Length: 637
Image 1 (cartoon, helix red, strand yellow):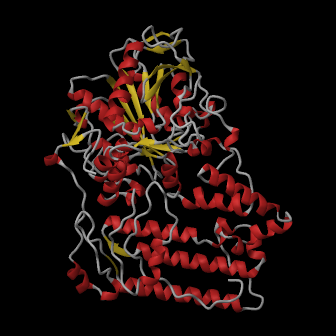
Image 2 (cartoon, rainbow, N blue to C red):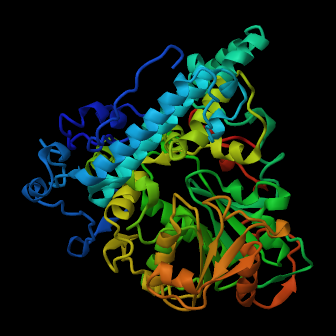
Image 3 (cartoon, rainbow, N blue to C red):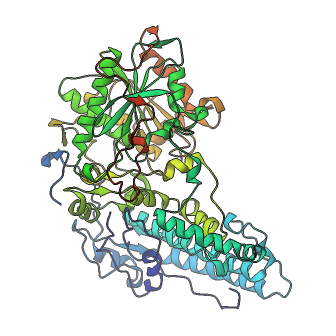
């Protein structure tokens, strides 16, 4: 998504801090918009040596459009409340006609400045003491003994932490509309994280000591790692040569029983003598690859479901290549979701199936089911939504990249065809957690010259997927920007008006308490949009660790509430915490919809849908960035 080109410039007093919103590391997928200038930068302490209109894939009913533009307060009203020096002025209107404005309460600002001056004076006094102990840093980036053995580096890190804390607290003090506040916080954090002294060789004593101890080998290896990553187009997080899909990740036994230009449909081999008559279809997100649900045997969601006597099918999405660049949201529903459902019904000889959607897989699954319901089809007996957004009112940190200008620019460049590359998407998601997923590896790989260790989860995280431009643009506009899925009959997909209430089946909804991509309160919002018997479970941890919490390890916990009030916080207040994995609760819930037991099938597929090749199939092995001369090719069995 494009940068925000028309935002408040801020005042002269805020100019010194304006760089904190413009100099942060950016993400190619959605080059960060430039928010209104953050508040004034703290004074530097004394220095001392060592320191498009075409919207493919669906249409919108104009009269039912749901928009979320927040009206900014009149500029004059703001000016009358605070001194002019604390108000963003000289504002240029955005494409939506709104004037983003911000201010800081002068009393709050003065309090922060006084606190900063006191802490700076204390720090400076300690620095001037001839035999003063180095300051306590309390940050893992500065935990190596080299940071405290050499006094100038310790004080440099302490000064950085003081300034970082001050800038972040100033960003938290901004009075503005919700999106402007979130953007100021986000980009202040990006700037602060990027400027850590640990990120640069001249200010990182640990990397310097390693350079001396290795006689320069660490620097040589770091340069080699950097050049290799430039060739790959991304920062290496793991030893990518240590893994291969189908060999040591994504190894559950099964076969591809159907393939078209959008999906492969995998049927997994049973592991129990009998299975239920009603099969289970898993729909993973088309962003990233499906084998997060089948990473290793001990943490495989696929294997868990198979072990409970379900006949499991799974959608493996195409990793879009240039020839797929015109596929739309409707194509992914019609030739992906609907085709998979009908094939599973045919193979299993069951009129109804159970279906589960994970993340955006749940969003597109629910959209497809609503379209089928409008046609009079009710193919599912139960639905599971795992960390899924149906109401995009609170889209998490990704919301900082969404506004009319951003979406319009993407529509102009990709709306008629093209690819949103996996590299751009991966970079965007990495900068949502920059210290963990960017700077940590910059320091380890390049400054210290270390080879990244083998880690299957990070291998999956680096195995990106391309998206067709029309699909991507439609998703951004109608879901994130205009939030129309929650509005009955506001969207038209596959020629049908979409009303989620028509799905009307028992539904299990899961959210993760620390999820920054699908905030759990937003996931809970699905309970207010769907009908029939609903159950909401809240798991500990984040988007991936919360969802993929194998029952066999019995770690973490989850919450269950018997009633579903409108407020998620009211639900949490009455919910009961249970130890272990939510998988057990879900499996017990799904048991009622499995159907009567029957002997496990001796063969996979059927006469019309014979096995084409063993799982994991071809599509999951396609790379987002193919080797030169292989663009658009599909791996052969």
